[in-house]
Image (tube, rainbow, N blue to C red; front, side):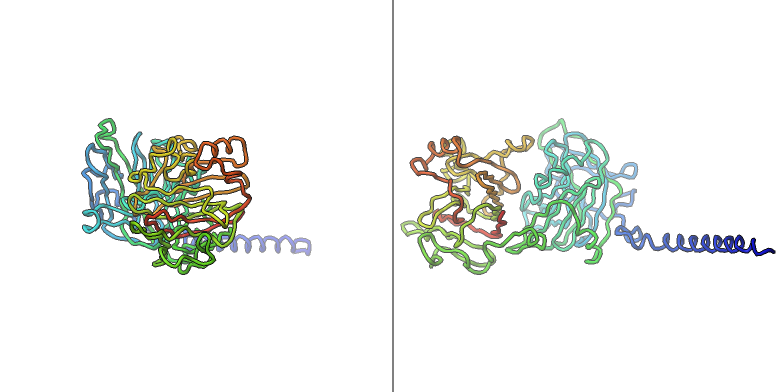
Length: 474
């Protein structure tokens, strides 16, 4: 063999070695890929065997659940309450996946970490629910706390997800729950990103929502298939921490790492009265306000006694986002004021009121003294900003927690209640001054037009609790 042909032989041998190497590499990749994937097939457990309802039980209502063609089918029935098909096993930390399809006009959802105890409303199913709905409101994938806390993550927090759900088609849902964090995806689109108060354990439940006496919806179906769950650890959860939906937190007087990164600060530490004082005082009121169990409470004033008085922040604030959770007692009245000065309690007021039982709700003009109003000036109306809501505002009743949000950017101010926008206005304008002139603040020069001011919590003789008071300066 001449020396000219030796390079060809070497080339041939190298090609063979490369092919052998690539073949071995492919074998290893095929072996490793399932282990590296965050949804490894070997770790999943089917909650539904495709044949019968073994491992499930029906609670509360009388809507029937059957198995048809490898699907669970729930049928709506008139004049029965919400019905739930629930797993017999409880779960805490998991990834849950399922597909569902609803007939037109129905509402449904899947309970996670939920419970049913005789001691709670005679066994009423309660707990977190991943919403599914055939409405223009578009909140499928949002998180509702069934029979307990109300809406925790309406999709007005994440409007980009409102179009993810496909009407009368199969939709895929993913739910990740780890400790007090709950995330959802609808058809691969990030929907909800919720940090709850606490970690709970409970069953998974498929809901057929009650339809009252609406016989036009009777006999319509909701279908589920490919229901599977994978229990996870902290290491598994790391893969989901980049979730793109905006985070909403209900941690008790704590900030999440994301909130700290975004610039949020606690305005009340949950334990002391630091940062607050009484109006016209250089200290916190000696009585009437109580700090206990992570709540800042104004006690009801007994008849004939002098009230404790309002409290204000020691600092002034200019442009900000303020969030405060509050709970009112039956018939209570209070408020959150901003742009207040150091010498009085006068300022723009986010009204806190038990609309149902306090007479002030019927005073003023067209509801401008009701919950979430700009007191005596502008009435709240969520329908102006989301015309597909079934009502103008969602208020959790007295002795339940609600969330106020006030956004101030220069002259622009917005009020939110439980995640929904209630009103918006511009200060220092002709319209603003006209509104003020027809309110109880007429005759007060430049009312509400200060560049900055203290934030005030109002003592209006009634028992009201506050917590999770936090602010982000803009």
